[in-house]
Length: 622
Image (tube, rainbow, N blue to C red; front, side, top):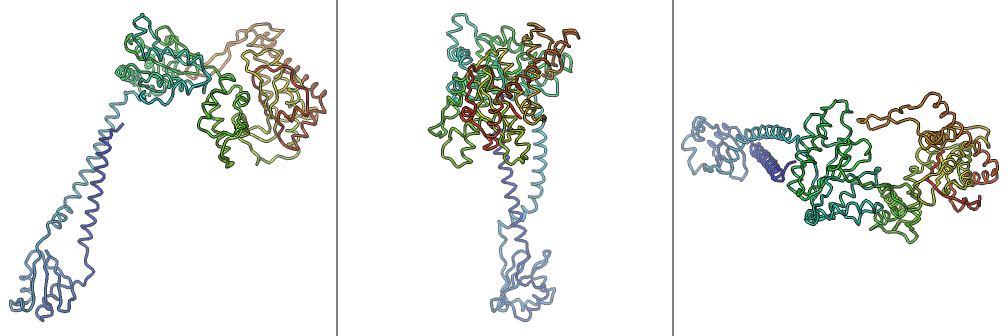
């Protein structure tokens, strides 16, 4: 990166070039012919002989001819001889040049004009030389860039004025407590060293995307008030072997000079994956970089006071050597926040924003199960944008509610043209989801039904749990399957036909049934066993196949059990809708009338409340 001195030097060069161009332009204007009449030298000689000229001013080779009436003209003389000699060659006598007849003045040469004249010849060569110097400087700069190719690209943030502290982090209280020890060690390392304690050299933050891993690392740096180096794992790796290892060495050397400090490596799985699984064998660039990281972490002394904080959402693909004691031996898991955590995150993100009195953060936290910190931040921002678009002075509760729907299902598409026939099918489809979920005590509560298109969905039914749960029962999964199939069942019952609107529902139901049979051991026929082992290519980081550890006979039983679960759920959905056909028609008619039904309005149409609410959020799309 160019220093300020280099930038100032370049600015000065450009300024000088600009001044030179201005001087050249002025010189050219100076050389331009005057607007006055220009006479040949022979005419001037004839006018001198006839006594028509009163005065002549000689300025270098330029002649200024002045007549008795005050009018003027200009002329040019030859530069090899004097003006008098040229006149005599043209027949002018000494008597004609008598001061009584004509006055001849010789103007001394101007020093400024002489300098301009010289500069007019010299400046082009100076500009050419400057152009060559600039080109060679750029080439030399490219050489310096090549020499700095192996230097670390980590961004350094000093801890003097922290922008993020633990007060700016919510929803992950257990993770914050784990990192308090790191902060105390950076502030008072002597307290630990005196007792022979060794602080972990590496802290690995693990969690799904958006849970605040990077934010938490910045908070640790802000609380400790120490320098903070930030770099992504992908910034180590280049096409050339050895560059990543060189950058690792440079980063750790810089960190040791600023000790105590924190080095944060985001997405460490980019270089920390299992060795020996890449396309380049055991000597590819990524593995060389990983080897250097392992060596540098082992090379730290107990008094170095440099802590490595890394983040990943794929801890399962990391090399075991990274996770052994002495390296990343402390692992901090960042889960999705519960309702209290979401409320705390909301309180952080609404700071400084004008809120209307009707805003209830607790209800908003209850309506956002499964949201992580990034989702909540996006939701609050969407609410602020909606309020600004509607010319409001504060953000209201309905703005937040609509922003939640935008995050879940996408923006509304009111301009989408839908025929009356399709609109009726969509209304009964969404009503089928709502009525089946409403009739099952194990299902979650229906919060909203709409036939307004959002994103790719023609309509949507939002079903959210009343409380956060980590365990899901078999009956809860079966209830979810029935509510997912309620839309297809309603189409068949009402229209004696089916549409493609249930494609996403069928895919989700099939996946749930297969997970129940092969992963969760919830099949009476196959028993509490796990069938199949998922394989993935480490360097691709994605599942590409499933290794079968069961026979073909068992595979047939799995397919039959999956089909039986889906068929039973579909039949149950049809039975429920036939039983509550009046409620189904009422909900569909209400949707056709006003396009959206809230939870309170559904309570009036179908007043049978759920007696039990549990499990994970379910969102049905037509």
